[in-house]
Amino acid sequence: MANRKYLKNTLLPAFGRLPLGEVRAVTVQRWFHRYGETSPGGANRALAVLRDIINRAVEWGALPPTHPNPCKGIKRHRRPPRGRLLNPEAIARLWSALEAEPTEHRTSVDAIR
Image (cartoon, rainbow, N blue to C red; front, side):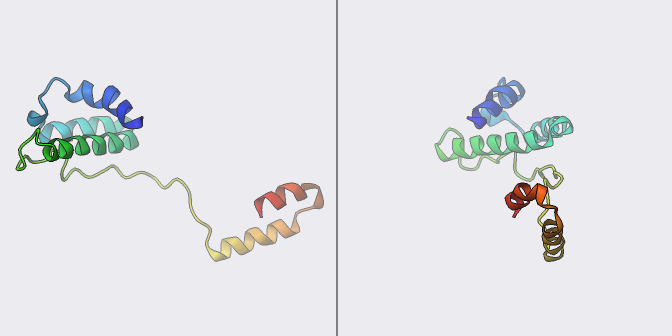
């Protein structure tokens, strides 16, 4: 479902006027850079969908086996980490804080444990 969304809302508006075999690396790079300025995660995902479309077209014979994938070599946008894992010291501090919590918050403390 998400792949269809990227195809319809992102890839077809950008590349739909071109035959698949005429999509060039420089065009994909420019598009990826522009899209990544506003949505780096979306650009990464849409690039993966486009890469898969080209690979499938080669696999299914719609493009010649020697056709280069214009997505190859494009570096994905780095995204900031979404969270972090607690190291053993942080877990020990959390456990101590949970043990020291007054009984009025016992339900919350139990849920965190």
